[in-house]
Image 1 (tube, rainbow, N blue to C red):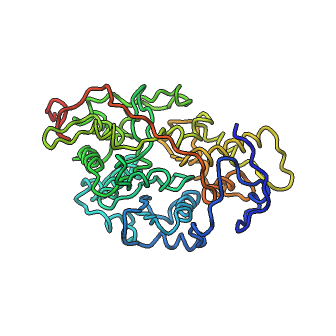
Image 2: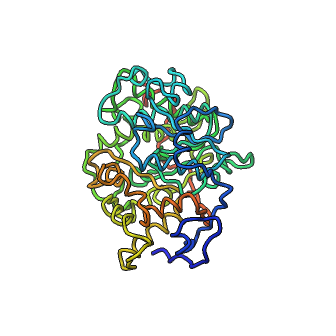
Image 3: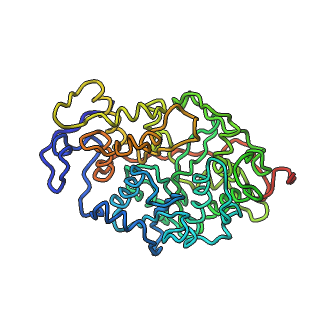
Length: 423
């Protein structure tokens, strides 16, 4: 369990009664208010719905297919808190596909980057929103540089300190950063909910080209795992025992189709292109700053057995206020929140694939009954949100040591199937 918070005197410049009462948890320190964006939530929300020029590579990119106003409140609060936490040096761009929108992705990326199904709005199936995001994220990074974050993510550490300082350091070998997890026993794959790179990154462009090729002549992802560019890869099959995850209630074929973007990454990292010399194996081994996803974004899932219901119970526990009893439930909630704030850099909530788990916290917070439970005054959920903005971590993040993978290497062009046969 995480240690209890250190008792301190009331904190100057901080108005949260919770922090005044309980102090700053171990492993954390207060952020000076002048480093934050102190506009009101309403002012930031209005600003997010305007288009902003790209004046540097310090961009955080996010996407919501139907636009800011159609986001559930907890997701809106996520994005607002990113803006507040990152301060004036970073620009958060929240893009959409709403016709006539100021923040439509078409203002930033040309249609030539996308397949017909995206450009013609003919994508169908149950995953139009997530797969639209898969098509959007890499062109934005390639054209402008910066960091992609899924909108369902809490941010507990400044992106400069997660990876950007090392990416922009000319003495550093790192050009790209993200979180990795075992998608098959012993096989790590980078997730796509947090991707960082400078503009013009060679891996980013090739990764996108592979994914777009899957969409040629189709309107949904069904059967992507059988595509000529991916069919040499085994189906995704996470080692659930290692992840402390219950059985997934879906077929691995459907799971692999849903996460085909991950499989495109895997193809590229095991490929050496004889036409231009691009070496994905070497790039993955030496140019990527990679961190374990179970520590940095799925901690909350692992420690709760991937139960959204359990996470909801912990976060709705009353943290401070009259009548609070510091019983076992309270101590479990305190440990859960303090550990997340001090020892993880993000917390990624997702909705699916639908039915894969018994419960998702994102689904519970989406419901009208619970749509404000992520921010009820005095609860651990509200304290988690407050800490994500006002606390800085003191730990040093430890990247994974990636060794040259002992795997089959493809000696083919980026868009050439294994064996060179398209059919």
